[in-house]
Amino acid sequence: EIVMTQSPATLSASPGESVTLSCRASQSVNNNLAWYQQRPGQAPSLLMYGTFTRATGVPARFSGSGYGTEFTLTIASLQSEDFAVYYCQQYKRRYSFGQGTKLEI
Amino acid sequence: ELQLVQSGGLLGPPGGSLRLSCVASGFTFGSYEMNWVRQAPGQGLEWLAYISSGGADTKYADSVDGRFTISRDNAENAVFLQLNRLRPEDTALYYCVRSYYTEYFDQWGQGALVTVSS
Image 1 (cartoon, rainbow over the protein chains, first blue to last red):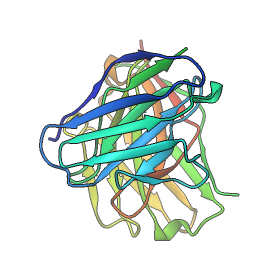
Image 2 (image 1 turned 180 degrees about the horizontal axis):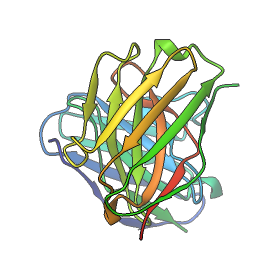
Image 3 (image 1 turned 30 degrees about the vertical axis):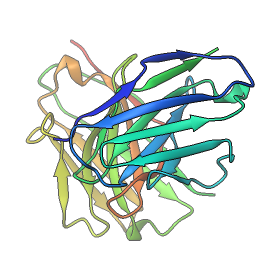
Image 4 (image 1 turned 135 degrees about the vertical axis):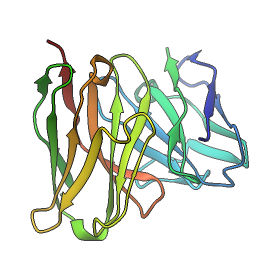
């Protein structure tokens, strides 16, 4: 099983700031990495796939990078609707999620 | 409009069985792989099961292999999850999820709460 580890668990920031979330895989997943956003009381939604490709409708202030075992999600100029929980997921070998990073104001 | 509509919440006793259903609309259901993912209260996401577009291939997480069974009816645009030998730790919000081939999860249902309690 590929274990995904996210850091930090909680990140505090203010609107207008930029933040970077990290995700590490226990073994290489190449670029088979996706990010999901989950707002309170809602189902998760796809944010990014293939490490850096934004899903339909996702604003350009979201960007992804990395390869192999180290990945990051950067959100520039935070908006109020960006405060949520973010999960990374590998899909190279079956599926596994990180434990999530809560982005709070 | 693309939708995955799940059945309502269910309650079952430890050791019992439940069946979740999810009906799709707005896309060619039989062309897509489907999955089930759960989220325990206040916790993260856990992938449970996968079924290929035609239903011939299934995969399970070790935590539920042998207890849960995924199936689908392409004529009815529906996917199911049979939960057997329920445990209290199976209490969670269960999501049906469409995947892009065997890759990322691009559409999620609204979730259905399963509560295991006597």
